[in-house]
Image 1 (cartoon, rainbow, N blue to C red):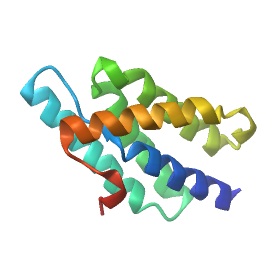
Image 2 (cartoon, rainbow, N blue to C red):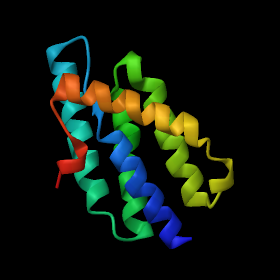
Image 3 (cartoon, rainbow, N blue to C red):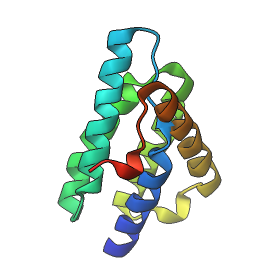
Image 4 (cartoon, one colour):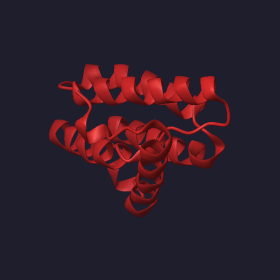
Length: 120
């Protein structure tokens, strides 16, 4: 279970890394991009299930501050993490998760100039 959770976290981070930080307002975009970067750093530092619990709070902040164009995609990502934490990996929709990650990746690169694969 532990290996699966961390493998899932790594795969999701790779997908989420390509997400964009976008928003209509400069301050909103900057705040969102900061949230994405913070969540990426915390996720890359995840070494235990307790760490993943902490990361969830950050991911929810990102989801809540995300631009409408990717808000649902962040919701898909958060839902997937929550399912993985509960051990409900059989219920994960890999196609939906991949599409969400790709959308997030494009948006974060475009609007935040971030590559989450390289955040540490």
